[in-house]
Amino acid sequence: MKLTRLSGLLAAALTVSFAGFAYAEGMFSKLPIVEGAAYCALYAGDGTTCVENVPAGPTAITGNERIPADTKLANGQSPQSVLFPPAVLGAGPTQYSEPLTGATVTVAAVTRQVIVNPAGTIAALTLQMPAASGLVDGQRFGFCSTQVITALTITDGSGATVQNKATAEIVPTATGAAACQQWIYVASKTSWYRVQ
Image (cartoon, rainbow, N blue to C red; front, top):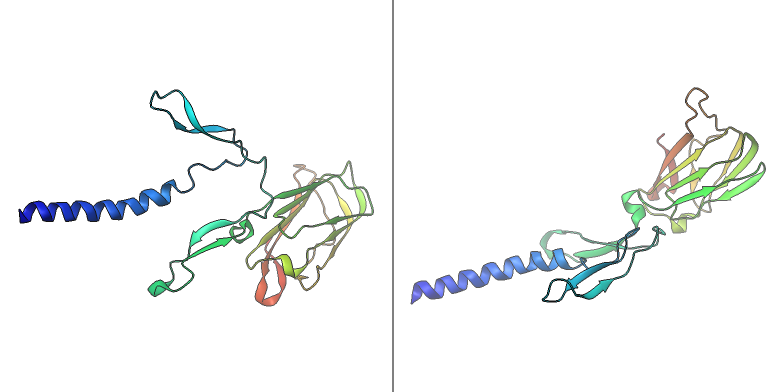
């Protein structure tokens, strides 16, 4: 009798502990997938009739999404779960432009990469960076040009300084590869620091 009760308690404990894992794993299993097609999330007992459809996902991320995560703060401190933007992970949308000489490319705060692809060499281009109010610590930003830009002006966003600004883009003629720079934003210094 005692052995049966102990087995029952052990089985119940294991069920509860594994149920947490199963629940967490299944929490997001019925969501649309970015760039993914619609799919069936649940079939009827016959195995062929779909009873729960999931719509197609968006074609791209906007940078305004929120990703759930556990903080694992010690001693159960709050918050244990948070939402954060893709920029915290160095992710975000790509902004593509085909500017003419003298144009200004305005960078959205959530942008991860700006690619400019002018028809040929351009004499001047201005890159307007976003305001500090829309940025997150550790956010990455890259700028690439497929063509030579003779005079590149990078304008600081309100409250956020860009360190070590590029003043021109020279595309390697041997490979034809785009010329690129990359910065990381440090919120405590309200500055973008160039890392490439």
